[in-house]
Every structure is written in structure tokens, then in C-alpha cells.
Length: 337
Ligand code: ADP
Image 1 (cartoon, rainbow, N blue to C red):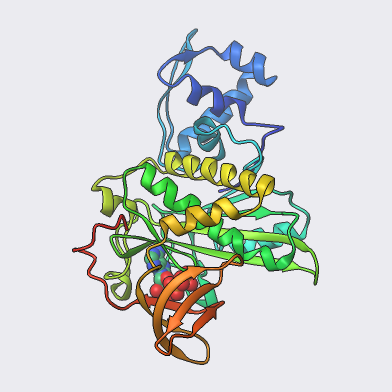
Image 2 (image 1 turned 90 degrees about the vertical axis):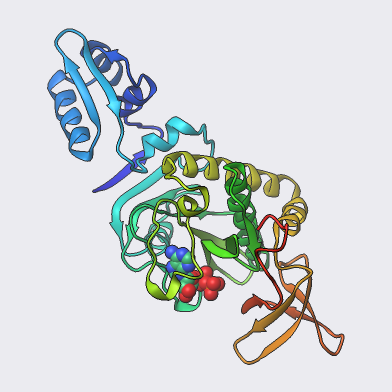
């Protein structure tokens, strides 16, 4: 199913049913509010039922929502979070090749700042450097189109900001979460979330940024090669979570962090990032495009580059690459990651 939700033209019926879950709402009040005929309502109700909504109907009493399917439909998100800028427009897909690919296409056609692309599954989800991101149904796979007034060299800070928002959100659910430079979120040493930021820019101005976030939530099975290094919120918490709750809370946090960065710059985001990072202070191995070396991760600088002191005592600035922690026993540390 493909669907576009626009806040200036919301799906009143589903919104009302969710708001009054467990109560009957009369056909008159629905048609009065949405300005639609009773037969149009009947059609919409049947469509919702076909999606898995359990809706009771009774003569004279109207309709009553009994239960919702586990879907990330726009109205489910809006019912849980009072978002201002994010999600004013939402493109929802049951299935998509990659939310980032669709987001870039839509952004290049003029979709505004804050538009979300949400999919129940991605067929060819992407990681950095052309890697694959496994995205079956049960996870949260989405992209945000941002049009920030930033110089292009500052855009990588949005990745750091997104990592902070994800880690804060996971911790708010009681899950361990720490950031692994530059863009992974780990829980118990295993990857629970990946972030892929893509940029369209001129030399001196950003056209748009697409922030793609993939979070393993109720998807618990991973391909053999990932099974030791990947985890999900379900695996961490021991139970299924309401994905719309998780996404709503994440978007709310992301919106607050974005507003803060817009108002005062990224200083506070970088402070939060350092506090949530599990890489700093550890001996790491850096695998770059041309070489591999070991050293101690000291800090990130104002641009988000990782500062690593190598064995000759020289501090190297790592702009991109992969890092792995060399001496770490996840079971023995008390770090929240
Ligand atoms: P990294 O920065 O860790 O190299 P990316 O952010 O580019 O990774 O993500 C791609 C990599 O993440 C893949 O090569 C694979 O190892 C791993 N991966 C793919 N899908 C998932 C998933 N759903 N959960 C956790 N890890 C995954």
C-alpha cells in the first residue's frame, strides 16, 4: 500500500477512531466532521479492516475501534506525538526498495523540510559505502528530508544529532544504548540501529539532507553472518514493543534536538554525543580506505571527525572509515552500552 498523509488534510476517520479507541462514534459525527457521505465512511472502514484494524459497528451507535494492527501508519504516529515540523507530510509504503532512495527522489522534486518516508520493509535497504541494510517487517525503517540552512561541511553533524536522538530514545525505553563512531547505535555491544546520511549540495549551500534511520525493533531473526553482531529492541527488552510508540518518541526527540541545533548550533548536541559514545577512551582499530591503524579514541572535533592518538603519540583526525574496539569485555563493563 502506498499512501501520502498531509497534516493539512488528515485522515479524520482513523484519527477519530484512534482517539476514541474503545468508544462508539456515530456515523453522523464522523460524516459531520469529515464532510463525507455515510457510504464513503463505510468504504473507508472496510479499507481499515482490510489492513487489520478491528472495528465494531452497531446500528445507531456507529463505529468503535477495538484494536489496531502493528503498522506505522501516519495517523498512528500523529496520535502518539504532537510533532511540529517533522511528519507534516508522510509517505507511507508497505514495501519499498530503500526509503533513502525514495526520499532523495522526492526531495529532488521539491518535498519540503520535515517530510518523512516510512516503510514496513525495505527490499534493498542501504548502509554506508554500498553495504546492505537488512530490513524485514518488524523494524522501523524511515528517512527524513531536511533542508537545513547549513554550510555543506556542517552536514555530518546531522548524523551525530540523529545518533544522539536514537540513543536517547532507546534509553528512555530502558534499553542500553551507546553510540559507536560515527553512526551506529549499539546495545550490549551489538548493532541495533544504523544511520545513513546523504547530502545534496552545491559548493556553498545544502540543497537537502536525507537522514535514513534503520532500527531493529520486533525483527528478531538476522541472517547467519549478522547474528553475532546485530540485536533488536525486542531481544534487549525481552518483549515486543509498540513500534508506533517507539517511532513517535524517536521523532519527538529528533525534532527537539533539531530545533536546539537550529537555535544554538551543535555545541550541546556534541556534548550529548560524547556522553552517549562508547568509543571514546578506548583502544580502537581504524580501518580506512587506504590503511588500518590502532590507537586510542580521544574525542571528536567540532566537525564530527574522530581524533585518535596513534602508537607514536600523534593525534590523527579520522574523517571516515570503520572503527572496532580492541579491548573491551562487554560483560564486565558497567558502561550503559
Ligand atoms: P557499518 O558502519 O557498521 O559498516 P553501515 O551503517 O554501513 O555499517 O551498515 C551496513 C552494515 O551493517 C552491513 O554491512 C551489516 O554488517 C550490518 N547490518 C545490515 N543490516 C543490519 C541490521 N538490520 N541490523 C544490524 N546490522 C545490520
